[in-house]
Amino acid sequence: MTNPIAVFGSINMDLVVYSHAKPKDGETIFGKNFETFLGGKGANQAVASSRTGSNVSFVGKVGNDLYGELLRERLDSENIDTELLGCHDGESGVALINVVESTSQNQIIVVPGANSHTRSEQMSDQVLSSTDILISQMEVKSKEIEKLFLRAKERNCYRILNVAPALTLSKSLFSETDLFVVNEIELESLTKQSIQIDSLDSIKESIESMGLNNQQSIVVTLGSKGVYIHQNKKYEFIESHKVDAVDTTGSGDCFIGALASSLLEKHDLSEAAIFANKAAAISVTKKGASASMPTTQEVLKLDKL
Image (cartoon, rainbow, N blue to C red; front, side, top):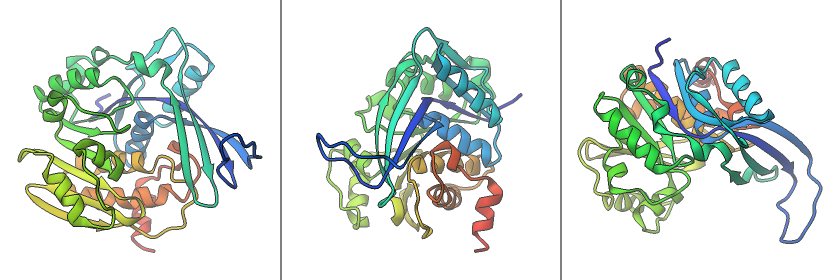
């Protein structure tokens, strides 16, 4: 099967506790309930792309443990091609997530496990040649992303980098990225500049300091405020849809996966961001990361509300 979108990245078992409040240092509190979900930024983005109509390959690694078996099964259930999902002789990645229900915000601790052993060589030149859009994040080794992006360039593959977690990029990885997708914290890390989230001028100044070339673009996600786009020396702000948030885990991943699906349909970046913004708004109204990703039909239905 030809898969025009490939996601090179992390896959975790999300262990999620919902509580009424965030515990203080040294404090023990009761949680409301506990659930497990398919997670990891890479897996979340792959699910979002698949549910919004794209054929997707996932390139990553799980451990040879029970979580590894369950994670592979859950990707398969989302119609994601797992042929390039390797198995490491060790533990799968896990994420410990506390969601505070009163604010819908979360705190996350990730133990990478098998993700640390994901390698660019898992994706052959033949597979790359049939890939139109390649997505990655910083939960796998940046050197491996850099090597894969260099090979992808030779095959005219559009490369999207989600700079999360917020890490320093090598000059090579920076120059080999076509589209950056970051939130305000990640933008500050990239530019080493503080920004005022309520000031678009502040965000614009920060973007301009990056020194993007004419072929590079960036999307800055600003949570409930919306998204800010820079492409072809032009800037655009897109407001978010107002919804009652339940769980914001994975909303940024939802945005990226839906964005890639829309770009694949030959929409320009502005149109794709509008679509992705709607998808992300829907995702925060549901619990879980990958479990909250909407379908194209749900996104289109939002237009009619």
